Length: 154
Image (tube, rainbow, N blue to C red):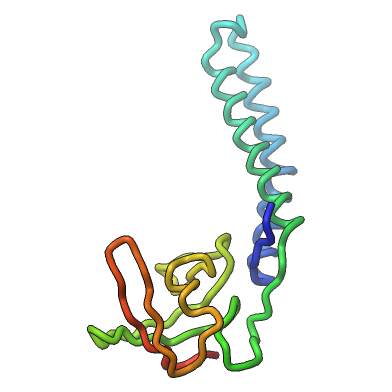
């Protein structure tokens, strides 16, 4: 698995989710399976099959979270320097429309465009990384190209 960028807070949330799944999730699944077994013949027991499927999905999530944590690189949200990078907060102006957008560049795990947190692997993230205040970047997206001017990097 490739290196995964995340904030310290993002790592903490993943660790909490993992702990919850291992402690509470596994206990709940064991109880669901125990109850489902009481319905009779396992070969024709839909409740048992559903419980086992849910258990498999939960175990897959545990494995995925553990892999992410093993490959996590904590980003410094107090980025120094004048180039945009993972952890930077960037202010962009759409050259065509004049609209201004504020984004924080994060790893894919923590991205949430509705909250202004974009992935370093997103079209805007890729275009902005390594650029400086005042630079113009062309963002290639499925709907076409857009040109943004970097107004500020924090």
